[in-house]
Amino acid sequence: MNSVTSIPSANKSEAFNLQQPGNGSAGKTMKGLVYGGPGILELRNIPVPTILHPTDAVIKITKTTICGTDLGISHGKTPTVLPGTTLGHEGVGIVEEVGAAIRNFKKGDRVIISCITADGSCEYCKKQMYSHCENGGWILGHTINGTQAEFVRIPHADNSLYLVPPGADEEAMVMLSDVLPTGYEIGVLNGCVQPGDTIAIVGAGPIGMAVLLSAHFFSPAKIYMIDVDQNRLDLAMQFGATHAINSGNEDAVKQIMSETKDGVDVAIEAVGIPDTFDICQRIVRPGGHLANVGVHGKKVELEIDKLWISNITITMGLVNTNTTPLLLKTIQSGKLEPAKLVTHRFKLDDIINAYTVFGNASKEKAMKVIIEA
Image (cartoon, rainbow, N blue to C red; front, side, top):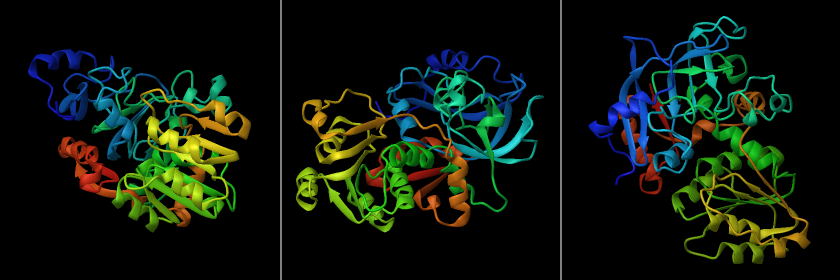
């Protein structure tokens, strides 16, 4: 079965009934990308969302994108996403309506939608662990309807939206929804990148590129980028990588170990498969850090019998987006240019094709795609 197809007519009513309860008003519909089960996506007319709680806001989407996580959902990789769910957890838009309790935003404001929803008051939010918010976390396009539509309802909007600065590039702002905070927080910060470090990023997709762009904040001496896609490796060199290794043609572990004293200070996994994790655990030097950013759908083999004696720190996690304000400032200053990641642009009416292109990234030379609603 193709990864992107239409929902058969026999399944349409079932998918429609699984839409978020109360998430629309009679007579008002919009276009949205609906997940119908593994391999089944369809752009359909669905109810326009309305305010369900005083802390909600409804946003008219202007631009959104496709994440590797969305692609995984389309293949059935995330069973917690039910058929009938509108996908997407990234985007920018205009505030259409706000609940009575909203204080920070008003109708007409241009906003960045965070991929993580935070109520701001639970135990985890008080620790800035917004990804584990007891009343939120990653719910958009996961357990509630998401952003790949004309409108979206944002719970806890005061803590889950950011104002777009006047004159800001909206395509760059979309990168602040997820990919940039994820690369920076889970890759660079968790990996404890320091000035003068030698680091390796395994995976030159959008997340790996986000790690690369934000790693420059800490002036590492060498940045190895490892991938099987030569086009992406060439792009990584343009973005500031100092070395590129095509692991489809050469032994990445052997090359790195021969060019360094005893490995890299920080190995960052940005794919989410056992082979790339294995490369990381074999190239990290004693006292080093292995930061896992990729979303894994299968178990990996941890060589703890070899790593324990080397004082290795291994980290992993889901983005909290607590660095979004900082990253926004770096974009405004011109020090960070995430719009460079955008390679393709589509209209919402053509989102099925956008998934096809993004799913064949190597052939299409695709990095991040922008979808205009």
